Image (cartoon, rainbow, N blue to C red):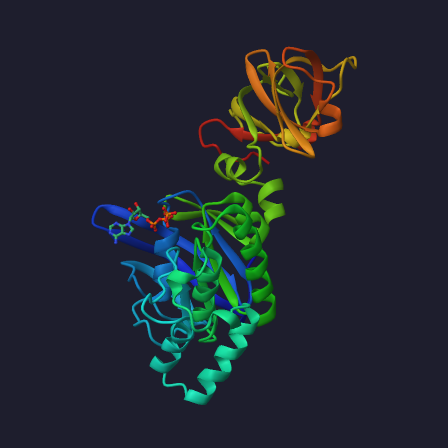
Length: 363
Ligand SMILES: Nc1ncnc2c1ncn2[C@@H]1O[C@H](COP(=O)(O)OP(=O)(O)OP(=O)(O)O)[C@@H](O)[C@H]1O
């Protein structure tokens, strides 16, 4: 998706950042539309923090171009960006009260005392911190500290807010609450947010648009649905969707029209295989497999293990030498026991086919 340049808040064009021999950003490109909640998603050490620090002006790339609001900031100083970053560690001033933590960046920016008081009143109300203003950070809960960190960034009214794994240090319940809180703040302020996380659930539940990062570059950008339904390659297919997609070696049948997998063969979905592509990988999402008891025509399998998760149960099935994960409604799982024989099937139209060497999706 390409927005008109007036609508683009941040654009990275082939940005490379090296630390000695380590290539943290390897020709990274993406653009963030103004007002979006954009997620930078990928496992540890793929360059998420470095990308955010580059946008904030804390790192200078060796190559490529960084634009903020249409202006070139590749080698510009930090000032003038109107970008604010919240770090994973919160980084509050421990010797200052919450009120003083809020006031500090505004004093630095020369904002008048009256306006500082007014903005602190507003932000404390929005973040429900009014009763904590005279406390020091160490006396606050983790969630409150994180709200102070967010507030200290928002109070400067930045155009762009960078959040680097802001919820990692919180427990599961607080993470849930803060996700909702950040989405609400995003709606309320309409600011552009770039949010880095290694957590798939967080990426999918927060991101209006998600960039999936691998080794310093963007593999694919899209909405959660686009990434789930049309992953560009095996990496994205296995990073998006939980439980992880079942992936197995496969080959093109000698008739050229069927795909052979360990537990049988099925008609080729409606795709054009590149000439010579015989070694394939097939991906079937756990939610796309149907267990159908003893119905005729199904594929035979045996229950290996059940993992009840409340509304749904994850069932591990062995079929030939292949172990498959299947998502089953809890009510349907009641009839299943480890060791039980069953049959299952899937819709070939929902199967993902990849080239075994390049691991690119074949469409
Ligand atoms: N200042 C630095 N000096 C040397 N190497 C660095 C520096 N900053 C980052 N790196 C390296 O660059 C790579 C990318 O790091 P980065 O912190 O950007 O990844 P990340 O995706 O944010 O990971 P995490 O989720 O663990 O924070 C890593 O290999 C890291 O060790």
